[in-house]
Image (cartoon, rainbow, N blue to C red; front, side, top):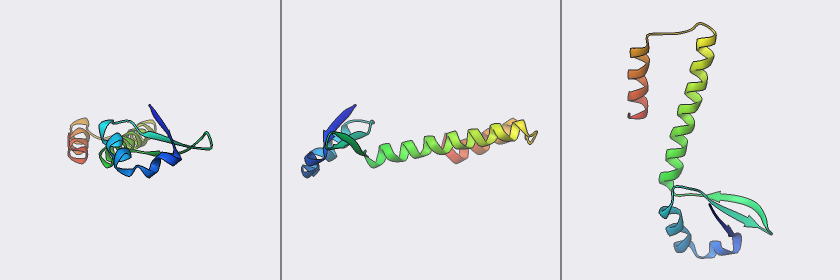
Length: 85
């Protein structure tokens, strides 16, 4: 985990390089306290895809509890298409 003070954001090229060298976010502090998080676009998009998938799984679990189910083969094919798996 990388933590840097907000004043270091002046070095934009260096910060960009740091973001692209890791899949982890970089935490920015202001006056010694957490203030922001930055990451590469690739890492951000990957995180968004994971979040969407977890949200869909949570929704599916709710549907199962409510007895709203469908054939597993159809569901898996739909998920593969949606997430590019």
